[in-house]
Image 1 (cartoon, rainbow over the protein chains, first blue to last red):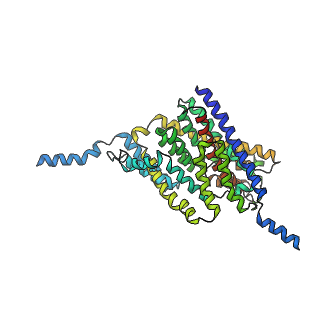
Image 2 (image 1 turned 45 degrees about the vertical axis):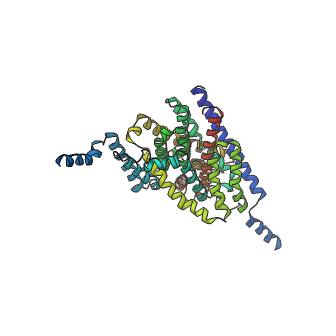
Image 3 (image 1 turned 135 degrees about the vertical axis):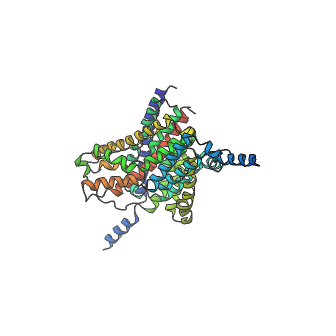
Length: 51
Length: 379
């Protein structure tokens, strides 16, 4: 493989692969936050409801 | 009798007789690193052992880097097989709080943009005549992450280890000098004063605990060659968030990290022997490393501008500059720049989020690079 092909492939796939990987991780982070919401907020909501 | 004294005396002079100019120059470089670490406070934990290691190894006939010598033993034990950078990663994971990043997950994308310099510098290195694997090692300086740079370089271009690692650590320590002019140049007055508000804790303990597991799983499936890097930083963070192994967490972030940092620094310094380090190639590597970090900062800010538009002006593009791995210096730089234009603006926690995103981004970029190189059959 010549250097031009290697350089372009690494640049495109490298930047693309990194951004796609981190985008998938950020989606997973959002899912985690929805599945396991912050407890303090839940308690506050509970307190508001009991007043 | 006189003959014996003469022979004995000549033995005492053998060191001075073997002192060559490259060794003297490199001792000077060692002293410069010591000065920067001690007087200027630039990454002293690394620059002091690196500087002293460079000084010792350039004393003639020390034998420190010969087979069986102390530095050679340390090199074979922890650098040649990538053990030391991986142990440092456990400590980094144990020290890092991903809370600010989890508060605003989209900021993680800034950590991706902050790695573009790696790949653009890789391409640029090929233009300068470096081989494919050498270009990968030089590009990784753009990760702005010493252990990652050492890990990749020791794997693909061990003969460039001294130049790449010294460049990586030097530029990491120079982030407060390199980044501000680029931030000021690439952002408008209106953008500089954008207030992102306060970060409220909205992340549960369980989310924080599962986060390193998810990162290992996704990162490992996409880029398996980077599992050692990703896995170790996630292990350290998992132990921290679990809260049940505080002895291991403390050992990782203190004793283990300190001991390994000392050995790592000395060994990197030991690779700076005058005869192999003083080349035009080393200067080019330093130049390319500088370009990589400038590109990282610029692409992070530009991506911040895109996110500003997509979020209706809620993101201050300056935090994009913190999407590199130099933690927490880069976040502090953004905070200082933000307050310079709006004293009421507290960007620190948002920038910390981008900065921890940069830590994951740099490891992920290295993992992606390793997997692509292997996939293309370059090695």
